[in-house]
Amino acid sequence: MTTVVTTRKRDPELAARFDHAMRLRDAGALRECISELELLITAVVAARPKRDPVLLLHTFMQLGYVHGRLGDNVESTRRFADAVEVGPRSELASLGLFHAHFGAGRHRDALAEMVRFLSVTRRDSPGYRELLVHEPGGERTRVAPELSPLVREARALLARHPPRN
Image (cartoon, rainbow, N blue to C red; front, side, top):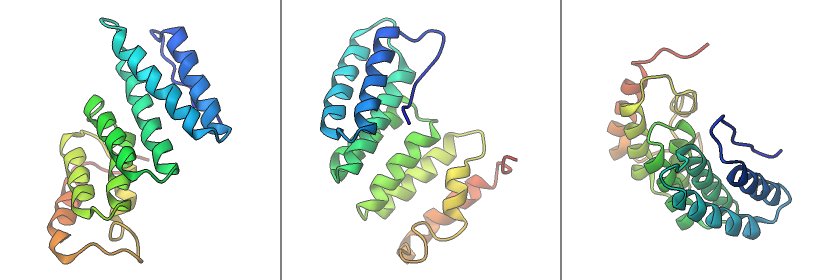
């Protein structure tokens, strides 16, 4: 399924380029998708003063996702970190960064991102709520005992917001 980023103020040419990159991703042409998304970042940043932060956020998140699919955890982490910088309250960007860190065995960094996000959000986080039902990482991957304070802090932050119905 193609991901389309839409708002009333979206530049139609840039949105079309994003859609083209998503078609490449969906067709399995991941390296070509990355090339298109990198070019799109340049175009979005150059579109000042009408820079589109939502399109930039989604482009960085897609780059993180596609690099992750290719097994490039370093670039995946970097691009999800870029997305978090553009959209610090984006749950999807934060979860992407969490999973990139966790998948690379950087559990402290993953949990620190979880705590950072839960500290700045004013709403429930279904994604993190699901992760915190059990130990992050599930039954097969337990966090080290020294990281338990971060897990407790994340649970306490999440408790501030009731689950969405």
